[in-house]
Length: 303
Image 1 (cartoon, rainbow, N blue to C red):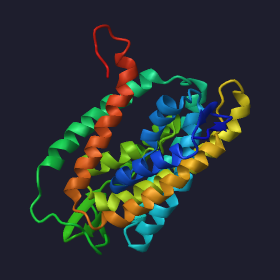
Image 2 (tube, helix red, strand yellow):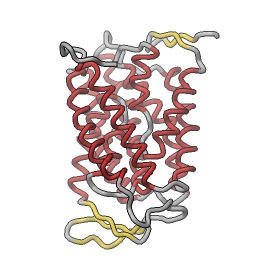
Image 3 (cartoon, rainbow, N blue to C red):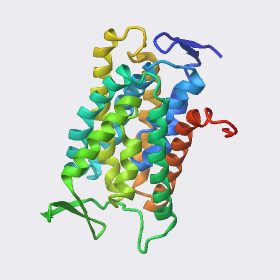
């Protein structure tokens, strides 16, 4: 099988491997409003062997290419809920730019920060797991149901979806999106892997409503992140911070098909299996991020 050289990432791989991996990952994670970039980061590092910060910026190139198809699908179906999407974009975009600076300035090898983020993910996975395994009466696939805004009350924004009222506090959510944008900028994951489970488990919002806004936030934040990495790369010439565009395009092509298909399938699935899938994805990410730290502890086996 012919191999292709990716100069910025500094690796050689079959040109068929990145898009196939991206398609499979995006099809699974896209159902929960997550781009799959957080799983492609370990793929770049562990499978392809990319060890420089270009893995983060390349991951964000993947998001820019892969997310638009799914976002457009949610928009056509009326499930790109604008008030929620605006908050996520306004918070995550500047956060991602700040995260890119932190990644290059202080966290070129962010093992300790990954361990902290993994503990947060473990907490979310346990909380989501309890809710996902507990069936809710009358829960069904949304079909053509769309969120309808309701008048704000008690400092909370409200909307109606499938005959049930939901609420969230805009300012705290804006601050949360900013913080998660920083984390996403550091790792090049767009932040969706953290924000989607928080919106579902902590805020109690329906996954069929949060998926579109979360992916739009990932798209906007990744565009800002790629620009930030490219502008700052000359300041850190030894780190290899610029994205590998050829690798990013291959990953993005597979991700575009996978995420569009996931967005098309999601409205035909009830929320419970999607919550279970999202729980498993978050739990797997937490274990993957904890593994480098556990290897430093004697007598702790890591598989």
